[in-house]
Length: 433
Ligand code: EPU
Figure 1 (cartoon, rainbow, N blue to C red):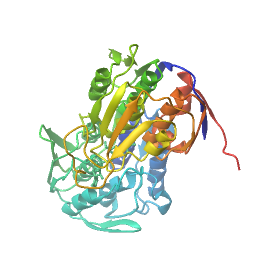
Figure 2: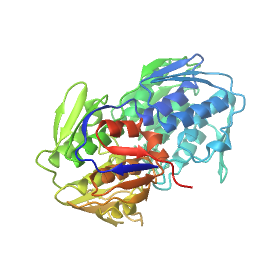
Figure 3: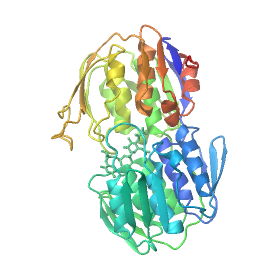
Figure 4: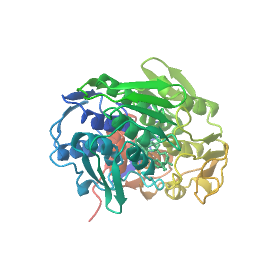
């Protein structure tokens, strides 16, 4: 666990590495090559270690050094992701198509990830069935079989990031043409498509959320440098703004942050932007805002957790409407225990009505600022919520104890060191007992 002493404005430079939500998918893609692939600018995060261990358990060689990973594809001994990986992250479901290509069979444990809603896998399973796989899902996980997958026409009911990746990772080696409509177009997906193209895949992108993929008989290894993590970059910019400091974030291109920067600018933040870094400050304070989350290039759902904490330090009433995940406000009680004035609702506030309109999903929040926060003993429920608790602790009037820090370390590169660099008094302590 971490102990945090509020330490005034956070200032300084930090560098983000390649995106957590990009690197793990590239690792899965590398399984499909018939020669080694190398990824550069890789972050040292828990999700990479988990995914690398999954690949190794399947028979792949994984060589890791600081900032670089090489995957040496090997024959798959048994097409089964061991049960020990149950619930650790969302990556096993992406291995379904690749394992079917490599062995004709796949057995996966239940996927996990953060407790931010039901996180179903029906889009993935439906897509695999359209490719010709026999898929069974039960309480133990997913099993599938296929002799040869063929191209398919797939319409996603919602532009799901993971399901789009499943289709790409499966279509590239399927026999014939796949047309995917309603695809997600997040930068990490485009990076994955480009990496697959580098491996020899034939992928076309159309402007209307459509991918057309011609299956090929083989893919070879490739080398790529991962694009910077926009979720991490945003989080550290907010760390500077919320404490009245100034953080310069290197390593994440401006185009990945466009909506985030505009949203923060409307709240009164000022930015200096170059080809290499973005620096944010709010010398005149912050104003309230109404924001709804969306698919790319909208305001990303992963940005909302730091944003809600920032709202508590902005003058007036702010509104947040979460439209991507039905239960992403699970972290609010922890923030309330630190003095944040937040009320949550099951209605659509702060934007057009969303898919959760007629449900009981608590997916809107009204936040009053400026609140005086106090330190607390809180347990982090997931990776992004974990970062928000650190932000609240950084502006609280007394020390905090944060538990479950493995969540934040699953998604952020060396967060304790990065926060210390910025001047936060944070130290790791062993829980008593
Ligand atoms: N959905 C379904 N059925 C499916 C798949 C998705 O109903 O089979 C629904 C989800 O329940 C959700 C919506 O579609 O309501 C969008 O989910 P999506 O599939 O896009 O999310 P994901 O692939 O599971 C990834 C990231 C998330 C990020 C979202 C949205 C990874 C490992 N996870 O999740 O990141 O919030 O896309 O951009 O890439 C995080 O990094 O902390 C994180 C949660």
